[in-house]
Structures are given as C-alpha cells and as structure tokens.
Length: 455
Image 1 (tube, one colour):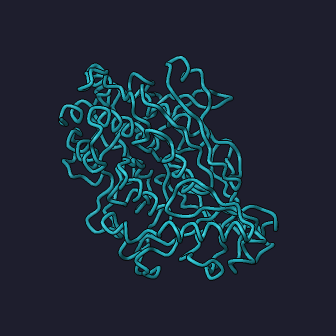
Image 2: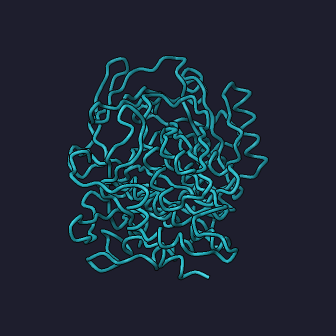
Image 3: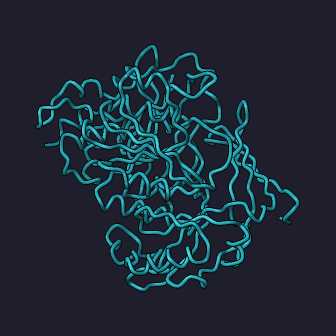
C-alpha cells in the first residue's frame, strides 16, 4: 500500500458477519491525533514475549509495572509533548500528533476510513499503524511496547431487524423472558427489592441519547466520555439501545454510560474509576481468527481486564455476531454472552442463528459463549430521527446478562467475578442441543434461578 494513494480492504461479506465494512487508507495529516497505550516493563523484568506467554490472573502481580516505572513512563511522555491521561490504570495511555508519534517511535501511521454497510452507511475514521510497521519503545525508559489504539467492531447484525415482523418490547418482554421481573419481586437480605439498587454498572458503548424513555422510567444514568480526542467519525447511537436492555433487567442500578473512543483501554479506565462499579458491559469484539496467540495489539486491554477482574469487577462481553475466535470473549476471566431467539407463537427458545460460538484455538479448553441473553429483534430507544429502532444481536443480549449480574451482587456483595459467572451459568435454562453446547453455552440466562441459588 503506497501512502498518498488510497487502498481498500473489505470485511468478510457474508450473512454471519456482525458488521461488513470497507476500509480505505489515506496518508494522515501531521497534526492528526493518534491514540496509543504503553505497556510498561513488569516488576518481574521479563521481556515482551515472556510476558505474553505467562500473563494470567494468577501471574498478574508480577506482570504489572511498579508505580515508579509507570510514573516514569508517563512523565517522559509529557516531557516529549504527548497528552497523558491521568486515570488510574496499569498501562499508560496518551495521545499526540501523527508527526510527533512517527518521529519519537519510528513508526508509520495511516488514516483508516472504515465504511460500515447500512442505510445510511456509517463512517468511522481512526489513525492506525501502517501494515508491517512497529513502534520502537527505545525512546522511553521503562516502556516495554507501544500499542496504537484500534477500535473494535460493534456486534450488530448485518441484516437490519426492521425487516422482522415481530419485536420484543422493553422493559417488559426482556424482563419476563430472562426472569428478571420475577426476581424484582424478591427481597435482599437487607430487605430491599432485588432490582440492583446500590450497584454500579458501566456500559461501554457509543453515544447514549437522553431519551424520554429513560426519564419516564426514572433510571439513574450518568453519561461520561474519557475525552479521547482521537475519537473521530459520525455519532452512532448503538449505546442507547444497549443501555436500555441492561436497565430492563436491573432498573435501580446506578448506570454509567461510558462513550467508547478509539482507545478502549481509556473507556475501561474511566468506568473503573466510577464509584460503586461492580459490573462492566462491553458489546464489541476484535476477531482473532487465524491467530495462534492473543496479539500484542490486544495486550493493553487484556491487562486492563485482568486487573479489573482481580479487583472484583465482573466483565460481561459479547461473543460476537458470526465472527470466530473473538476477543475479549475468549478470555476465561470474562462472561461471554451469546444469543437466543423466541418463537412468537410457541414461546420456544432456540439459538439465535447469527451468534458467534467457538471452541478457542488460542485458549485451550475455552468454549464461547458461557450463556445467552435474548438476541431476538427488540424495539428499543435510539437517537433521532426515528427515536425507536428494532435491532437484534449479542450486543443487546450482553447487557441483559450484565444487569442480572448486578442483581446477584446486590444480594451478595462479596461474590467474586468467578462466583457471579458460576451462578449465572448454573441458573441458566438449557437450550437444545443439551449443554455444554458451543451454540448457547449453559443456556439462556434466568435471573430467578441464579438469584435464589446464592446465599
């Protein structure tokens, strides 16, 4: 690909793909902004290859840098002229101009223009690494590797659900089908309704509209963004519908709508800095099909997710809508959510045909999804001009499970993320074929079963 002459790359064009797209690459302007993260030298002193090989929840302490090293890296970046984000994090995230980044780190950047199919098409731009270009960390003492942020693919179906003759309605249909409404009538040990009160849930997604639907239901929502200046492109209100599905299952949580920029690490940093957050919902994926290991490009977010889980936060992510080997769903520390559908005449639950399901070739023994939410067409609030849209997919199933996780934590705040996942899976209602099925995991989430199974 020659700079200055646009080239194109087309996403897999088949009905299983969550979001087909076309990429074109242009030469960036010197003052365009690039977002990146620095993985610092760990306290164990191992090199990058060994860090990636050994990284797990069990080896997390030795895999993280000391505070001294992390502050040293941040101070050097500021001195050079980069904007460094001060959110607490095990990695250092920053932004800067293309000219400065290329000069300091000896790497070539390009502007990627990604056009998602749809009506109308949605365009997303980002400054990314040129193919076969790798930043050198040598200019920053304590830096192990430099990762240029690369935004994920939203888990939205290729075929728009507006063509469907049947749609589920919020909040009632979703609350009923997941047994959340039955759970809401129960009382916690503190004599509170089992509706998620006192639990913070962060939904990391795109823009969150201030829709009358949210105000009419009295939901508590804080809308925030990490001020990632490299977040370019057209507004996309996917997050509004996703948030509404979480609140259908846990109406009294403190919800934080965290706008996703180019750098997902920053969104997680901001979510984890919010008071009382015990659950994070993330309806995006990176496809790792054909990879032998988790790539270096995913290392900063992998580390961030591991530190979140180690601190007691349950991470609920989408399995994907047709991709194979998706990240972060393949991580055994997260709750990976697939989708099911319901027959409007017989109430029969069956696997949603667009849901990703796989036995990981990267993480031995990892089967995705863990369990499922409702991925049937759901009539949900969105941003104008329609204000309501019927959509489906694991992007909407994921926040349902996140909301139910909040109900479990409200009842038993000492639950670990692993215990939350176990309770969710143990309470799930099997969907043919019998579990453990690669299609639906343990089955469809059932809030009542899971809630009553824990002390």
